[in-house]
Length: 203
Length: 373
Image (cartoon, each protein chain N blue to C red):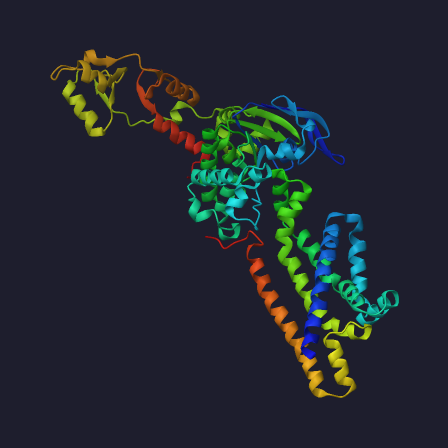
């Protein structure tokens, strides 16, 4: 029963990270490409992050009722900030020379974005995804209050019946999951950064 | 043929290019030079429409570039920039093949092209093709930058201060490579620099710009010899100094240590003098040191007999100048008549010295690089 809770938790987190990327990446690109909407987009994701997670889930529950969709939507909104910000930052920090070279070669705007800019910014974007994932693992604990299940419910039940074992199991699983994801993704990230800039060691 | 017609460009109120006219024949290496802010980079970038002109027109082979799709136009014009701008996420081969890929060449053809180009600059395909830009030095990166511009065989290459960020030794060898590539491949190159040494070394034609206008269009020699005005002269500084004022006279560069003989010397003796001094001719004078002519080793070989005097072997129609003849005259004689040297005679026909190709080039070197070096 408790082991399935781990999987349920994982399921909620991974699904919301997937949606976060699907939503956050285009928003970041939009913020980068369209100056007029930039401040609006960046401001909106900032504001979302300042709403307490529990309150955000509560508000969504009012509209959608209890259940996993509420949890996932809440998590997505909550973890947009690092993905959108890092996408925007990664793209706007690309050396102007690289963009000029791309234009000079005759790339169209979309081609340049897909073949040059996003690949170069990807390590930074990936950092955003890692932060979003690790945060989501913690925030998903609140899922239990809106009927989402997961490890939050294990801990909550442990507190209720004052069962130390249950609390520890839930907490340690969460910590382990967070550390594991963080470690693996940090490793991938490090490898991604290898060819991000042209500045190499002088031979 | 590229033709700029009355091209102008302003940024706000600042006019950076004013009513510019320029014709560039195919296969020519044209260097745009001038002080910073003279509009040379703008002039260059208007050709591939990275900067759009305000008025006037530019045509390539008679076709107005404003009527072409800018992306198509750019993919047919090579482009090299100072900051190199290789794509860090791509290998050397992928970088080279960017434009072929844009033009949808098939993979095998692109690979073949990358291989061919790398060999052109002596970078073996096996060693370099799969490296990333950050695994190479700046000089190697810019070599790839140049190859990337050549990849899809564009007839025109634009270079915007391509070697400005490289160390002098790397710059020098890349200049040589680019110049020889350009000659071998017959490309039209438009090259922007603010370095006169570079311009003189690379250019077929130097276009000197200042404040958005062309002040002079000429060969490197022409611009050195006759700068159009003070701005050009000042910019070229040390390069042009002595040329413009014709300060150098023959007496400044002649060699005074001349091997002289009198005409009653015997052939064998003269040959001995020549071989001892490792020269192939002697100046012949009479007993009062008046100039008579020159004894050439060829003449001795053809008609000379051991034991005879050299009297009948003297060449008398050798070019002569006076000590205050401008050095340029001597230079023209040497280069046009293909004479090994000219003889400098004083007013009373005595030999003051000779000017050889060596003394000529030493004098030129001191003009170009200064006396101290």
